[in-house]
Image (cartoon, rainbow, N blue to C red):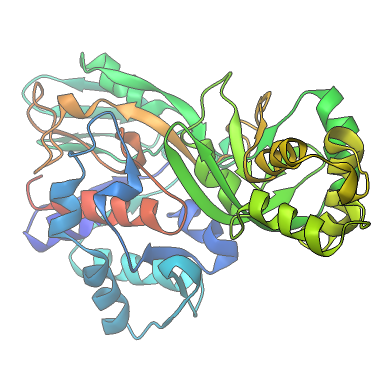
Length: 376
C-alpha cells in the first residue's frame, strides 16, 4: 500500500522483502480466503498505549476505500459474522491485485533480501548480499514476531532502537491459552474439540463468540480476542450461560422439577460432556430440592462467572499478531514518520497498534501504508 501510493506520486520505490514471495501473511490469512477488512472498523477495535494514534489513518483510508479497490479489480467478497469480509477469489487474488498496482506505478521488488545493515548520513543506506541501496526515505513494514516459522521477527523494533526510538516489547496476542497440568488433566483434556457460545471478560474487556476446548487449554474466537487484554497472573471470567440469569433460571427449575439432578438440568443448557465435567470437578450434583436458595445462587454465580486462571499462552508460535512495537509517541499519526529521524517511517504491525480479530489488523496495514505513502 505504501509503495503503491508513493509510486503514484512519482517516487522511485524499491521493496526489499525477506521472504521468497511477497505478502506471505496475506496468503495464509483467513484459511486462504483472507479476512481483508471489517465492515465495522472503529478506533475502539485497536489496542495501543495511545488509543487516539490510529484515528487519523483509519479515517483517511477506510474499509470502504479498500473495498472499492477490490471492486475495481473485479474481486468479490462474502460477509461472515461480526462484519468480517473474506475474498471469494482467495488470498492470492488480493496479493495479485496489490502487486499489479505496484508494477503499474513502477515499483521494483527484490525478494529473499536479507538486510545486513542500515545507516543514515545524508541519506539512508541499506546493505545486503543482494546489493546496497540508498534512499531519501526508508519505510519499515516488517510486522511483528508472531508465527516465526514464516521468518517473522522483532526486526522493526531493533531498527527503532538503532535510531534511538522507544518501543514497547512485543507480546503474543490473538493466541490460545494454556493451563497448568492439574487443571488441564482434571477438567479440560477429555473435552478437547468441544465448542460453545460464551462471553469472556478480562481487564474491562468483554467478548462473546465461540469458545473451543483444546488438548492444551482454551482457544476459539472469544479466547483469541480476550488474550490481547490478558496479563500473566490474570484470571479470565467465562459466562457459560450468556443469555440467562443463572440464578433465576435455577430457582425456577427447582420449583418446576424439584427431583431433577443438577447435572441433568445443566446438560440441557450446556454441552453435556462439559456439564458433567463441571459437576464432577466443581459443582457436585444433587436433586434440585436438596439445595438451599443460597447454594443455588452460589452455583449460578459459577455458571455466569466461571473464573479460571490460564498458566500462559501458546506464544508467538501460534499468535496471529503481537501487541507492542514502536512507541506511538515517536511517530507522527498523520505521516507515520519518526519525529526524531527525518525520512524514517514505521507502518503496520511494527507500530504499537494491534487490532481485534476479524480483519482489523489488515485494515490498519492498508491505512497506515496508504497514509505514509502520501509523504515518503
